Image (cartoon, rainbow, N blue to C red; front, side):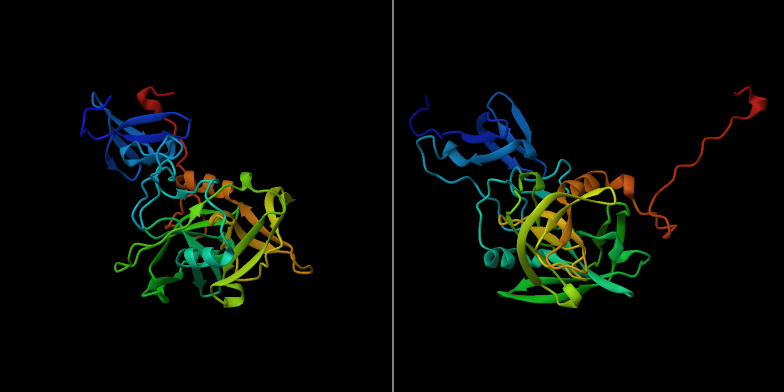
Length: 316
């Protein structure tokens, strides 16, 4: 029982269903630091469902809302293991396309090369972004157009110092990094889960079909397991055209559930997207797909072969 005037401890709800009570000392990028009184506990963010100042959680006889992060910060409990990208909760409220398109607009970009253009989306505020491999294939001169919100309006800005970080040709994915010295902190998307999608569920795509930037198209999920050339894709009726490649496919929670990359040209409403689970796997193992700047024609780094020891030294 608390003494009169004593502060009630904060409440941290865990994704496992448990809870921790203590004083939240700090919100780090990758963890929540909680003082339990007898020790300090560091809880990884991916283990935290929500936390409440003073223990005021709904459903426990109180009505206070969970503590929300400041604008531009990563949401609590929604970061990848290494903090590289954000993952939204499937329990987030469903909203309409008009509201969501306005909200995610800053995070969707246009990717240009001397041979063409495509779309992409920002993964974190440091300027890492994802697009399709075929959008930048064979190119090293890449620039990215980002739409920053200024005074309620979107202003286009072109970044010309873009580095290729990692490539996976088989899954048609490319990770890029904006490295302009004067680049601001970027607004990023949140990744969702295609496993929580249902056939018939509404989705929408944002991209630059035929160069028409910031185009929004809406449709439904036609199937989640369309196999093409040994790879599983999401099939959608949302219109996908050249220039949409590499752009995000969102659910109605504003979470990325796929990366649009192709369509069947002799049909209508037959678009395809790479499931976001494939994207997460690529990002989590991005070092394995690191681009070798010394050999632009090869996206892989090969280890040197083992050498036989000097026979004269007695080595086998």
